[in-house]
Amino acid sequence: SSDLVNLAHRFSDIEHPFRIANMWPAAITLGAVTGLLTFMYAAVPVSGLARPVLTERKADEHHAEDAGVMAEPPDKKSLPIVRIPLDKQYVPVLRNNRTVMYKTAYFGSIYIGLPKPQKFTVVFDTGSGHLIVPSKKCEVPACENHNGYDRNLSDSAVDLDHDGNVVPADSERDQVAIAYGTGEVVGEFSREAVCLSSHDGDSEGTALEKHADCLQVRVVQATEMTDEPFAQFEFDGVMGLGLESLALDPEFSFYGQLMRLKRLEPLFGVFIAKEDRDASEISFGGVDPDRVSSELQWAPVTKPEHGHWQLAVRSIRVGNETIELCETGDCTAIADTGTSLIGVPKAFVQKMHWLLARKVEDDRIPAADSGRHPDCREEEGPEIIFDLGDGLELKIGAEEYSRPAALRVITNSTGEEQLICRASLLPVEEMPALGPKTWILGEPVLRKYYTAYDWGKQRVGFAPAVQPPPLEPGSAAAHRVIGAPSEDVPAPTVVYIDQ
Image: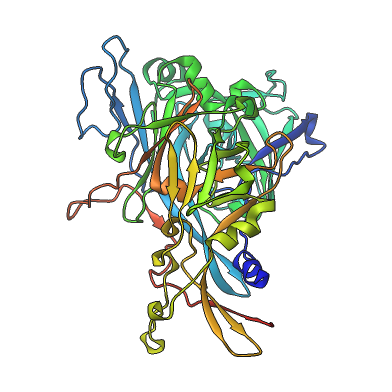
């Protein structure tokens, strides 16, 4: 019934990434705009994260032990690759004082300012275009447990107004307001030295000359931050890795600046581990060949002027049924590391829940006295298949898209009970620039497929991900897992319906 479908997606958990609306001189007004995508939080702890790995890419080498090294043509200049392990954090989502799901966050460390680099943990978000960290000036509660950027510690900072003009450090400053779903950040600007690893003691000139992972980029220093999401998560800020048109100015675009310097390949790769015991990873300057099971298959970015890693979708199938919404070939999908769910056009969410909901058969229900509950990730369900053309199909199974806990539906008039497995889907609001048929390839896709983002050729590559081998006994993990829930599947949510 339609009641079951409504129940299947009533617990939406929508977070939005940062989007710039507008800005005005002297911070006398704030601008805000509703974001497009969900924010899949990614965070690195303040301490305890492994140092990024900086490796030389050789034209004639391809050794499995050199994670991230890829073979290049003989005439290709050797360029480094930087791999950053990511920590993971869980934050519970409560409904009526009951945990119904968890938000997840993956984050890694960067360093701002020289000669005393200041360490920040950031989300690497392909759905936004700016580098944002808290300022030491920020005194709101959301900033209390985060590292704050201290202008006085940096010899490399140049203070700017919104037009990029240099201003005195202690003068009244322009500010920008950045809105994202349930919260907002207000901040000032500077041009700063930013590095992907620590180069303590180096001057800006030395670092920019010697180290390929250092560059100058404009940074937004937040002087105000809302509790949602910063009070909940350990990460300090966000590094936007969207295309350059998402940024206010090209100098705000971290990867755009890297590409202009031509010191790293204009390519980065993302691996999201399936199990918490393994470290997720982002690599700058190339992909990790040990994390892919085949050659990458590429899909070109469509409408890059909008700034998103947006791909044309030929068709979408659920099991053997082709979705009518995309039969005309005008659907698109955005590959977004900042989204925790698969995003579905809002007008089609209800139908999608119908297609993916399924009943748990009686012989699959554990005995009442066992203390166990069915895990919907282990219950068979139809695949979601995104056909991106030229033989590239992304197949997402019930293990990836299902909520672990079932829904126990009790009919009041008869007392009949059914256990229903549901999908976790994100309703995507229509945006004029992107149209009403935009889907989001979020964390469920990224766990199954390694993704590579080719800035130079404006394309996205996919290959089935390979999980790392188990750690040797006594080996230290390269990442932390924060707030991990119990491995026990929660009891089903109980709802009563009238028929």
